[in-house]
Length: 216
Image (cartoon, rainbow, N blue to C red; front, side):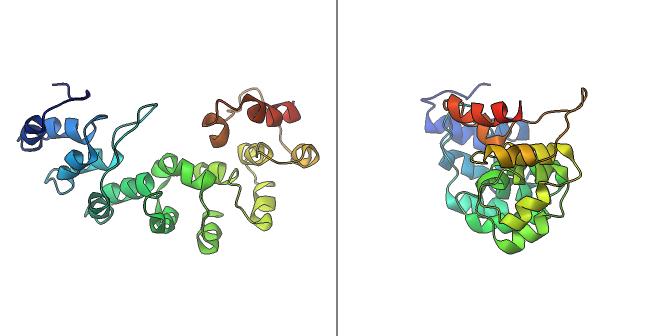
């Protein structure tokens, strides 16, 4: 069955939402083109796999995804399953910024879901104070957040992990002198992680080129 297309009749969504097979219902939960209101019908689905699929949602790539209505998001954030709650919060923080506080309780396995929040959101001082002690996946994205206080930025610039220090040095708007003052040594087998802002602003080639040229 393939439902990732426009123009599907409401009666088809009715049938899918009521199908006894959870894998069929997951097709609706993960559909790119199904309206958010249709996917929201699965917010209290009895099968945890369906609710997890709904919380994660379809991967948007370059396709606009109709967001879930607020009541569905609220239900998922209060779900009995911790994975559903964690994923829902990570995916929906822009709609409800209050859930940003839960980022400090997220496990390392979900750090990638919080990439945009870590790299761009205005986080409360208490949240930042707890995040500074988190593991590498969190610090890597936090290092490029433009709203960090100077004290935390200086701390990250001397982090023991060279990838975190490199992330600080790749911050947009950093002076060339400050960028080159940050110690970084890239060895042959080191992994280079692209900055979040660079990977989401492909059209601004000049902006992306400056940090790379400064580090050359």
